[in-house]
Image (cartoon, rainbow, N blue to C red; front, side, top):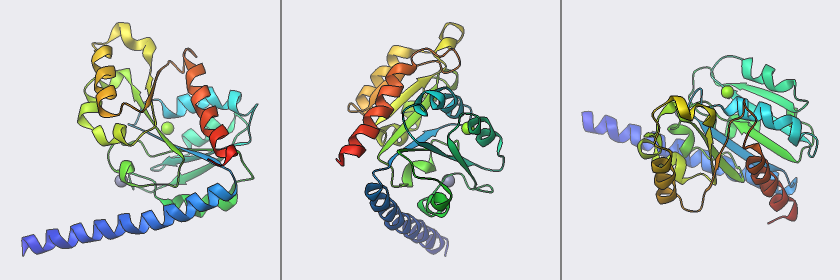
Length: 225
Ligand code: MG
Ligand code: ZN
């Protein structure tokens, strides 16, 4: 009996992911038609996703028409922070759900103006957002120094499915016990193709490589490749 229940649960989870895959495929077609570059930003709560966007948006908004989808459990605090930048910001409150899915993203696209770049800040979580494709061109994981140096090993899939890894809050390095060379080695082993960047968004240092990476995603999409 117990085993049967588990089997049903596994089948339901598979259906959910299958359905998401189909909807994400529709989104990808739509984004391709619009030549809209989409980046899915993952990371734990407090990793610095919103702070990174806050530092980047004033610079990106000078170059592109930028929109942000803010995924949060309940509040609109992060969306309010980002709206000051001049980007078009849409909030999705998941009401307790711990990830965004393609249906939620598809449901708010009509509210956004015509854009060159859409940044999606996922719900703070390194586990289940990994399985939910949002039709994005690239995925970036933000990992802060304060989270500890064991996280890439503990949550490998988040890092394996990303095209970029941003090591944030580098300014804290002198104050915490954190083996940066070991983290870099783990990342290189888990995902040798990923672009790894180190920055401090509050100190505004190291932002240039991140902005260049974002620009490369947009340029690639404009070329239609
Ligand atoms: Mg946030
Ligand atoms: Zn979830």
